[in-house]
Image: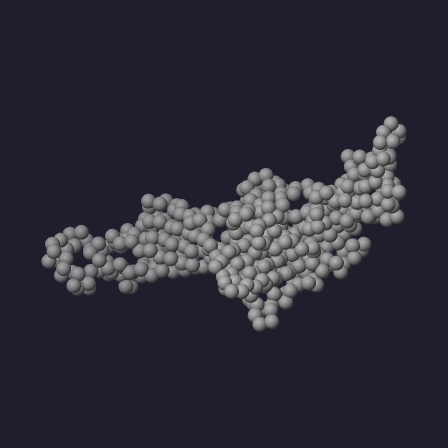
Length: 477
């Protein structure tokens, strides 16, 4: 005779929060509610409360994976190539002992889990060709939660990085059904972002230098009373450029190569005249007219190594262009400011994901800077492009309260933290962070890879980087 059913549910303390690094714990509880058989419930409505008593085992499975799907078509034929990369797998025994609960009573079993700091070497990781853009060996930093797709003329791709938590409930020796309300076959999604650095540590990153040499030679370098006035004089000077003095100088700049989401980029520009080659009697006034910055995002995905080749696909796009805020914009380079100008540019908002690379997905960024100098009646425009590494906001700048509840404030959220919903299967439908299985033509979610099946759920996890779940007493509510 059936003893009824037990309804289980995984409840996260902060389901919309991104957990940053291995020390930012995932906390919550597994709730159990006993429902006696319907017939017994109707017969015992006026009698003593019905009670469930028996052995109970609760196991947790915490895992992550990166997956890509590349579709090729030339009009006559098409092919699909996949790349699968399990990132880590943890198994924990949350509870193993006797259990008693009344009908309708909700009993909670709290847990606390931690992401590993790095990826693990697990069965089921695909055979990928060696490529310096991608990580080839286990032990590289865990990538953040990620989803991207691209639809090209002959090639398109879908990709994601996801982390999920599953629970298994057993009551051996009792004829009772167990159902989990919210995890389905895939589990409850857990959002992850890379560890945040302290501001003091971030300040130690080196900057990259660049230089632009500029030469001026025209009538504006002459004293006003010596400048040619009539047509004949101007033509004479134009045919003999050596009649004009020259002024040579170098613009030297520095830019950080490590950029933090939500933090302004600080550009430093300094003017350095070449005194040995300058013939102008009076140095001209040099004005910084404008500074513009734009970030270009590159996403590259690949499939497992095939018989002849390894398919890959990519997309790149420009983030919104921004204008730099020049400190003292109307003041030229001069001795008072040490011939140096500072520019602040907020190039990265909170919907930008951090840089990462794993077996089958790589996300990187390039920074393009353009500035304009006005001197001696002429405008000179200079451009520079350099790679940057994007990080989440520094800890000291967002505060510990922001880390605890990233979902409550966009300024405290990691890249794309408040933009993604709780369920990764409904992520933005038409942008670069699109879901995989909620869209037409996208791959259906499969059951967890085989690597999860080779581990016994009844044993403690001994994989590197795992953590033990808190084993506390059950709490009824």
